[in-house]
Length: 510
Image (tube, rainbow, N blue to C red):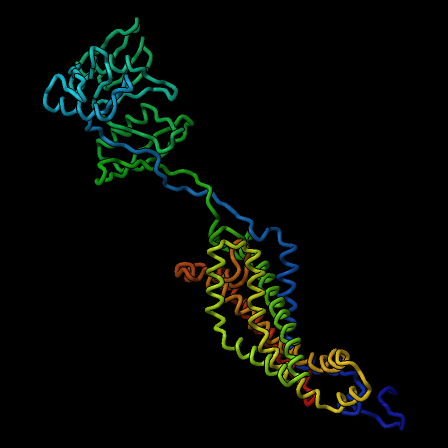
């Protein structure tokens, strides 16, 4: 035994001797009692790790909280549409050839009439070929109707009205060649049209239109597609101008009597629900964001909200509870009735209503978090006020408070220097144990869509993905890590709070 463990009379104190403990300061005594509680120390270690994970981990992470990741997938997308033309198609040469004249001309053709009258004007109909009719007024050609479709062989090519008329007149009358403006035109058996030997246009009963306006479909593609449709094939292969062979899927729609042509195309999509890998240690979520990074930033948000809410509640509760306990009488009665009113407020329905209102007003997600902290803090102070009032009522009757009055200390100094320091240990315990409940409340609200909103992350809105049964059963890495972190954090706060309660209790002799 060393000399330091001997008293002035030479008596030796053992390490467990109460007389030796009494020489320790109150803070050292609390610290020693707390450190002897291994469960509380374990909770403290877990909290330190959570803070390092959330605040330091988010700072050193190579990814950002809202950084999106993409992958390239093959998706079958509608590429073109095909329909067999069984109706007359009208082409105008004059603005007067409107849809009303189309209908009148169709009635005349159906009745084998060579002319018709509309609004007092006479119109003539010429049968220029098989299912090919031209409309005139006073000898002037207004337009024509035909079931044949003329297409240019080039993307930039346009066929004038005069050439269309001459081409259809020759084709519908089974002519293999004709001349127009000094150019020799020939028509082959497949409907191909050549101008002075140059591939110029082609005729078909099938209307083939690309889905995108900037896509041009060549004659070879259309002919192979129509041949596959006539053969009732489900798909066909075609080599594009880039030399790559593409597969096209043919789907017939009986409702519209048309065919939908789908092509597998490389599409840039969110790298959603990617499995854990070297690049993403905990995979990605439905938006293609790194789950580990989201957990780090989510912990930062959850812990920050918990501390700020408890800070607001503690300040309000300590001030109002202290005033009620010290002054008593009508002041105490008034404040306690306010506390009773807040106890009766249905906090969950109120938060749901306020959340719906903020959704309707499209409140910015960052401002929404501030409102959430203020609402939770304002609703949480009555419990602390009730506890502080009880402590003040007990302390103000103690002898040391009588001494402060006898020495003439001001009310402010009595409260700040003597009452509040004696209440702080209980406040610390209350706040520590309340932090876990606040974090759970925030997580519940975020899970229900009433708390932290995208793109900000919290452990609550990360777990909200389990609303989808498929995600719940197939993508464990999306929600289990957040649930484990939430469980450990709340448990750690409760363990630390329980340890502090035991350490601050002067009756504990450990």
